[in-house]
Image 1 (cartoon, one colour):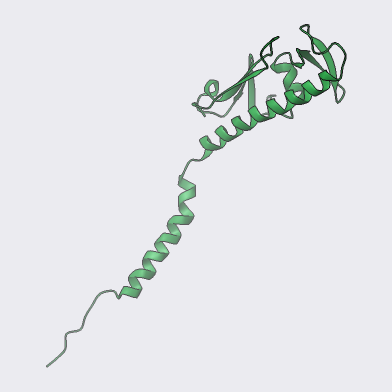
Image 2 (tube, rainbow, N blue to C red; image 1 turned 180 degrees about the vertical axis):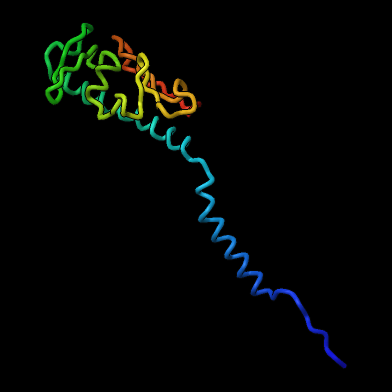
Length: 150
């Protein structure tokens, strides 16, 4: 009696093909996933942190200068740059940017709109930024971060 010859793939061959497809998918998947929104959100939160750190530096400098902790705008010198302070903190966003290491010019990634720094490349730039609120006699400066349009 003649034995029938089996055709098809062995289990080992199927496993090798599945492993190869998994490797190809793992290397190709990042090219198709858009992580730019997450990156812009993280950078926006980093800008807020930079604003807080710069304002802490300004406050420390203002505390060491006589008359710089009062209500009137007073200038303090930080690394040779005059920064306008109000109650010891940056008077406005323009004064704060003088201390921060950020490019808001034509070639930079950020734009300034009033008291807000926005990401130029965001889906909705007005909804991807940090708004600076100047200090008052009783309230320290505020930082409002919006990332819904990143």
